Amino acid sequence: MIELLKGLRVLECTVLPTGDHAGRLLCDLGAESIKIEQPGVGDYIRVLGGMMAPEHSAEHLLVNRHKRSLTLNLKSEEGRKIFFQLLPRIDIFVDGFAGDACTRLGIGYDDQRKVKPDIIYVQASGFGTRGPYGQLPVHGYAMSAIAGSVRLRVRDDGLVQEVVEPVEDRNFPGYVEGSLMGALFGAFTAVAALNHRNATGKGVYIDSSGADGVLAAQALDATNVWNRARTTHDENAPPTVGADPRDCPKYAYYLTKDAKFVQLGAIEPKFWRHFCAAVDRPDLSAQDETLAADFRNIGGRKDLAYELRDIMATRTLAEWLELALKFDIPLGPYNALEDAPHDPHLSAREIVHESVHPIAGPFTTIGWPAPVSGQPFNVERHAPTLGQHTDEILVGLGYGLDQIAAFRARRIV
Figure 1 (cartoon, rainbow, N blue to C red):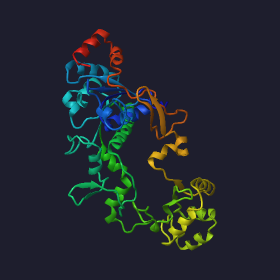
Figure 2: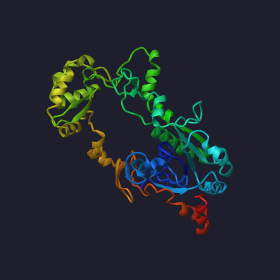
Figure 3: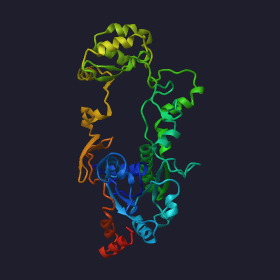
Figure 4: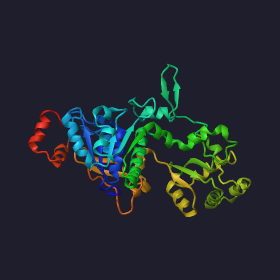
């Protein structure tokens, strides 16, 4: 188990991926989390998407792993009393709602500071609270849309559809998911806030936005686009999304002998020479001498892509990987997402995590993407059922079983 945050205590009022992920990321690193949920309703991510078992969606098993579930009616005075009994034991509070929902419940940042002055309060929402859209409740698509991560077209029938197509001024492909990015920056900033609290004794309020996270994840493209009018010329840029391989033959995908895909990236002069030596084609390197001074050269002769096509088709993917390791060539395999769990490299890194949930059964998901020496990642606590740990948590606060039964009868828990 990764124990970098062992002993850190998290309290969550979250539903759906943005807030859920922020808590999950902290828990994956060893923190303990209590997830407060509305009695009888809870986090409805349990029933969204593919179901592993009733009330156990695949997303729920991911975003709520390592957490304990406490049902609590925060609209009631007694529910808020229990909340503030828990709070002094907590280091980080995760607010997964839009706008001032927690403030209206009487458990917002200013309310919490009266009981826990050094609380680290992370609000992870779609648009964040600062700004004119701060009260809007939104899902992941809206976060990506406002941040320029999607492209649209109006169809002949007047409907608007998202499209994926070549883009001349974008260098980096891929879809950036707003909920996860907002959670990632929120959790990262919360960990940084621990250092601030240790130095000053003060807590902080963190306003994490999924839309901001999407934009931040596109920082390279965004910076290039926003400053294009201020630059004089574009040297050694990566190929744009969907570029014609004839325009970037040394930085392109090719088919191998066994009908698999390989990505060649021999754009630095030394790596291009390594590749030419590996395939015994010194003539290709000689033809490129006029460009050899460039740090990176993704171009070359227009017909070079066809020569490389034929060369790459002479070996299997495994043979190319063996050759790349031997000659120090930037080259890697392509995986469709469904094939990624079977890649030997990804398997060795344990980023694809296999577990068995006590209700949902065998489950394959993402582990931790930055392995820690001597601390292998595993799931110590599976995603809970609604209110699974209510009695356990309340007993820990000193409540008797009769009191808990009375709470339940009155729908306080």
